[in-house]
Length: 293
Image 1 (tube, one colour):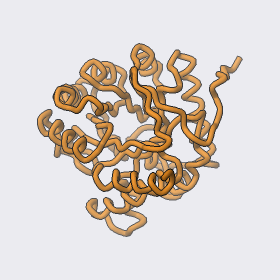
Image 2 (tube, rainbow, N blue to C red):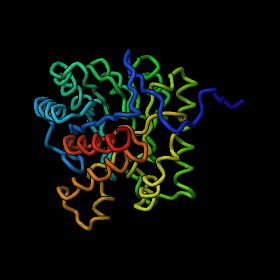
Image 3 (cartoon, helix red, strand yellow):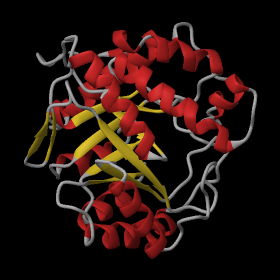
C-alpha cells in the first residue's frame, strides 16, 4: 500500500523550518545562504578557497555581509564535473567547517553541500547544522544520517548526476515532474522518520534543465509550494544568466542575480543561495518591505 502521510498539503505560504531546537518562520523575512566552494574546479570560484584558513575567512566575510547560512562544498556540481572520493571531499571540507564553527556568530548556520552520507555525518560532527543534498536524499544511507540527527535538510531535484545531467534534458512537463519528484522524496523522508518541518525544497535550477526549463520553473514558483515546505533557489552566476545577457563574463552575472533575488522573493522563495550576500540581502529586504510593509 502506498504511504500517504496526512501532512501532504499545499498551503500558499510556507510552514516554519525547524533546525535542531530552533524554528524559523520565513514568511516575512527570508534568508541568504552564502556559498563557499572548497574545490579546485567550481565554475565560479574554484581554487580560491581551498585551504581551511581561506575558506573560513571567506565564510566570515559572507557572514558579515548578511548571510544567515554558510554553505560549504567540497565537490563541484557544475555540468561535467569530475567525481570526488568521500575521503578527498572530507579532507577539503571538514577543516573549513571546523575552523568556521569556532569563529562564527552563534546565530549563523553552517550547511554542507554533499551527496555522500559519510561526508554529511562527519560534517555534522564538525559543526554543520544543515545537509544540502543535490541528490534529494534518494540514497537511503543519507536518509539514515538525517534520521539520526536533528539537522535541517535541503532536498533538491537533479536528474542523473553532474557528469551527465546536461547531456539531453527532457521533460513532458518540467513543473509537474519536478513537483512530483520533490513530493515523492518528502514521502520517503517522512516514511524513514524525518519530520517534514526539517526540510526545505530546491527545484534545482541549472541541474539537468535547459534554458527553457529553468525559465519555466522560475515563472512557476507560486505553483511549487509542495506540502507547505519553504523553497530554496540557487541561481547565482549560473550559465543560463550568461545565455540571457549575451556575455560569458562571470562578473557580469552579479546584477542579474540580484534582480532575480528580488523577483524570486516576490514569487515565494524564502532562501536564496548566492555567492555575494550584500547586494542580494538588500534586494531581499527591500522586496519584503514592499510586499509585507
